[in-house]
Amino acid sequence: HERQDQRLPKQRLLVVANRLPVSAVRQGKDSWQLEISVGGLVSALLGLKEFDARWIGWAGVNVPDEIGQEALTKALAEKKCIPVFLDEDTVHQYYNGYCNNIIWPLFHYLGLPQEDRLSTTRSFQSQFDAYKKANQMFADVVHEHYEEGDVVWCHDYHLMFLPKCLKEKNSNIKVGWFLHTPFPSSEIHRMLPSRRDLLESVLAADLVGFHTYDYARHFVSACTRILGLEGTPEGVENQGKLTRVAAFPIGIDSDRFIRALELPQVQDHIKELKERFAGRKVMLGVDRLDMIKGIPQKILAFEEFLEENPEWRDKVVLLQIAVPTRTDVPEYQKLSSQVHEIVGRINGRFGTLTAVPIHHLDRSLDFHALCALYAVTDVALITSLRDGMNLVSYEFVACQASKKGVLILSEFAGAAQSLGAGALLVNPWNIAEVAASISQALNMPADEREKMHQHNFMHVTTHTSQEWAATFVSELNDTIIEAQLRTRQ
Ligand code: ADQ
Image (cartoon, rainbow, N blue to C red; front, side, top):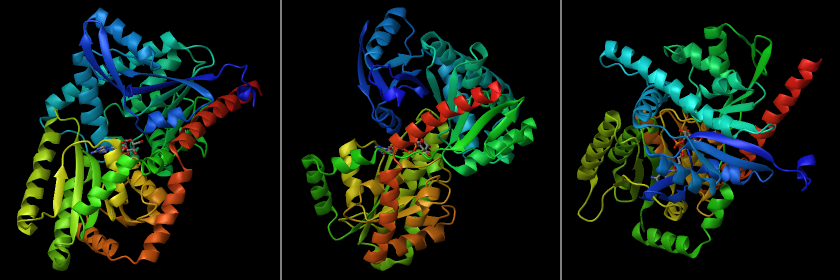
């Protein structure tokens, strides 16, 4: 209530994430062009009207010279962004190396890199050192900008070392940490050579959040088994200090999608798509081109479906939009060629002179084109092998108010826990099962589709990204008040 009083300044929120939500392009020695990318996190924080939020993160560009750094800092300040400048070698070892080559695959149950074990072990250490160094650089920028009473919200697996760096220098800082990926079973997590350091550091936070209860449970078990600490229903006890651990399932800004569908340019696009695919059911996949998204498994299941249901061959099309990411990593290049090869084979096998069953685009679509595609889709096919949440499933549901299409969703996506009752859940490794679900989805009676859609639509429009961010931050404030009361008692 006090905060609602206009005379009081808003509470400041420092959001720390690896990447700032801007893309920066250098125009000259001292000028930069900035473009804000409105992702889930940005719109979530725009909704937090009672906080004065600022971003701290890497701008995604190497700026070795002081003039360039000063100019970029100034330009970013207008967008309430504060840069952390990382040099090329740090980015290589910390971001490409430790974050994307070690933690990302391990947290998605894909194991650790195995080639040339000895050299991996050596480089593992130097990558971990770079990870710690980079996290310390983020902490230095936070400290520089911190004012008493600020709330610091750290995001994701890139910054697991940050809570400790922050608290070491100032134990009064309110620190929350949220993981956007799954937290794996403790049996998987214990493979990490730096398993203790990372857990201990995360525990320095006051509040630790995950998308699902299962991930939170895995984290608490890892602390119990690896650090020998006591897990309680509230979190983890460490030397008399309680770190609160809880689930905060993310959502989307559903209104933004619903409103976009009314725009004339989106309506025109919808009309074009309907004409283009008239007489065929549209199936859709939208993913970053990543191993965890199960794109080859999805396409193989579609092939099996076509093989077993010849009557559908000219009546259905799969649109797979896979935006390339981490293109300099060899595994991702291999995945891209593998997907192209399978798509080519299937189109050669089932295509005709006038139509092919799979349209595979390796590029990003703009927001309006994406909304139009979601709206004309009959069946969305999400086959992640593991996925923290999967927001594509939420976006699809938000755009389906008139079509009421079917969601086929991997049981290994966090979203299966929230949208499971309104989706056909599949094990993406079981190609035959996914193929059978495609058939079930395409043949589903309208009343059943409607029932499933209503369940999901209700969830997506009430559990929004704004609600997620507000809940996390207010829980963080409460956690700190409770801790203060406990120490006074
Ligand atoms: P991601 O792995 O990126 O996020 P997801 O949650 O599906 O996965 O979000 C992807 C976003 O990128 C969506 O907003 C989608 O619209 C957009 N996108 C994907 N492909 C696109 C394309 N070809 N063109 C345009 N836009 C595209 C990580 C975790 C997830 C978790 C989120 C949020 O891996 O599990 O849900 O963070 O916490």
